[in-house]
Length: 244
Ligand SMILES: CC(C)(COP(=O)(O)OP(=O)(O)OC[C@H]1O[C@@H](n2cnc3c(N)ncnc32)[C@H](O)[C@@H]1OP(=O)(O)O)[C@@H](O)C(=O)NCCC(=O)NCCS
Image 1: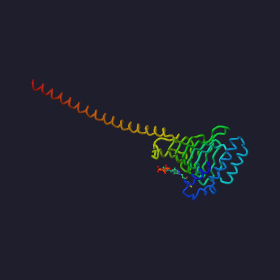
Image 2: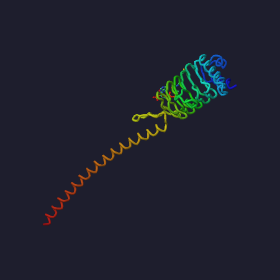
Image 3: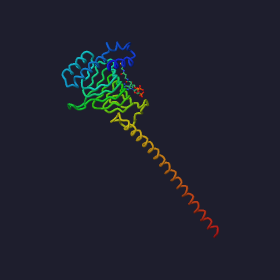
């Protein structure tokens, strides 16, 4: 029943699909999911060899390698599929879309530890994107084609590039910093802090210019004051001479 739902959801989301039957019979992404449901069943019942056998068979037939240990939610659409690799401790939420050549890969070699990404609901991962390590991709986020993601991505963000950084949040463009290096991005808090620091620097420059102008005005006033005092002194002396 779950698989029929998956097939219907693929049909709805793929403009190229002509019918749900076509999806069931011809789509490698759907076949890979079908195999994964079985291999995952055997994996959970500790029949590791048969689980792995099924996942490798699926990999040969579809070009999509999903480790039986990976946890996959409902409505996953693996489009085209060839070259997709989903690692052992990867987790994928509901209604996600993954294009060909995507890797949800592990970092580290420790057994039975979380080494692969966790992907939220309604996430789109563009062709060729690599998400590496136990990072979290927030709900409704978009990972641009060809990106390499090494850090967590918050909800509702678009990230692109190698290494990926946030280019949009909630559909609004995030301006990149021109003067400061983004070493830890994607991180919206970091980016906001950088923007604040840039504003402070600009204000400091403006304040410095105002102080210089003020100092100039003060020295001008002092000159005028001196001249006035000198004139007063001269007038006073002239008055004294007159009275004498
Ligand atoms: C990232 C993506 C989902 C678009 O998301 P979006 O929120 O609509 O973002 P936009 O198109 O407004 O792009 C935002 C910025 O990122 C840039 N950008 C978009 N995709 C990019 C990518 N893959 N790599 C690098 N930069 C990218 C845009 O040029 C734009 O830059 P700018 O602000 O300097 O103009 C889309 O570009 C993408 O990569 N989709 C994957 C599709 C795919 O793999 N198809 C395969 C079909 S076979």
